[in-house]
Length: 336
Ligand code: GA4
Image (cartoon, rainbow, N blue to C red):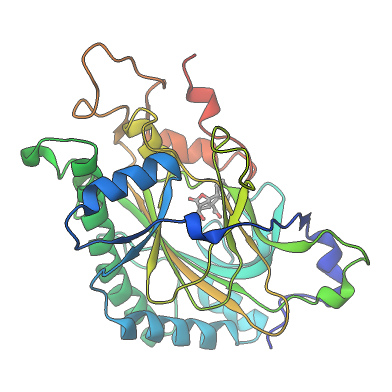
């Protein structure tokens, strides 16, 4: 087991209430099936989240990345820091997320993986190569999903690449990969009668257009149902892990690009109890800093007004780094 910190400091990590919820409502979509576009759009409208199967990425790729990452995280703390540099925001981080006081029971690597970018942190060469190979494959999945999203939104065939082209193969686009390692949590040190889990990664929405997540088989991820959903359902829904599938998140920028048709999903991760570790790898698809983020003309109805004040991705990202994880980063841009 790898300890990320002295056990007594677990009391700095916030506790969260756990739901008794029905995971069966999370849509699972076969990306190659007829009707995938409509199913994707429906899931993005209702949840901002879905599971993607039949994605074409060979299982071995994610398994190699998982093995390489676990070997990296098993290194002594100082060696991880020396190798990758402290997360500012790119690099190796432990417990601290962003620079405004958010903490969680995890350690991570945050990497820039844009096709044009030179690696900013040094990884063991074999891990670097696996990250690159994995990124190429997951970038394709994100591209395929963005095309299905556009089709499901009713965008004309000739223009269905509109979303994909903002990220995939676009000069200067802002793509990142985050590898999160949640070690087993020393729940024996928690207060008696606690209610009930230790925060691995606190609730937040992703600022980008799309995020594509893959984890090992340890649970922990939860998504929040939207306010106006059926009141009978608990609001936090645990996402059963599935190492053979990818989980797709709608990000804040996609919410704006679709003028609120798709909604960014609030999600969080609880630290694992028992003696399992959770390892997740997330690809974040963001556009170039100069990209204007405003509702796409291809999805707007005649006379429809934008719900948001327009911004560039560079402006939004800069502002995001001044916020706390759980803040609503879109609120300042909402037009009432
Ligand atoms: C959330 C999504 C991605 O993990 C991330 C995170 C980033 C970071 O960890 O550096 C942020 C967070 C994320 C949003 C608000 C700011 C920035 C930490 C934080 C408190 C890499 C991203 O792009 O935004």
